[in-house]
Image 1 (cartoon, chains in turn brown, purple):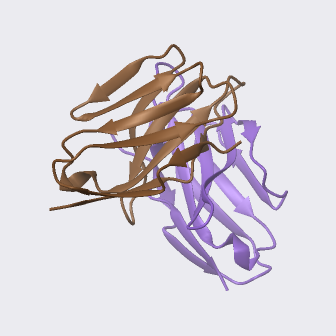
Image 2: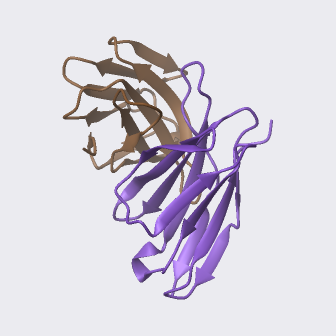
Length: 111
Length: 113
């Protein structure tokens, strides 16, 4: 039931855009996105609830297609600080929290 | 406010031993989850506790157990350690009102030799 992330890795030049996808075979209640830098804890970016909403802060935004059980993370005008591994976490409606994470997408932004 | 605190940061244990890891969540967060992170498997869900009760459990053997105290602090125990248990163990707390994600601790790096 682990969500599938794509691509597995991406290399960008500063200022370029990237899209990271996350898909699940289950009916989702919510999707989370996190970024983890090497040797650090994952940092929460945003959460999207079912309803097809789109969220964003700064130049990072995400969408959630409830019908397809897919979410996409959009990074625009990438900065060096965007480098890291991005994880999506998916939740189904259940008692409590049980977030299952994808395998991650490694993003490297070079100058 | 203080973040999620995990102790110890590093541990080296021998096969067959047992280990206890500790996690103090963000003040006010009553939900605490544990994850195992390895290079090959990514973030694997272990269990989630809320108000001293385990609400969800992942697909790990019974050697992995946990508990939560009345102050929301949580401990995770692994008995009869195996080499494959070497990993980074992450604790994450989460508010139960509003739409917020997890705040992760820095983790405990466990090495089994």
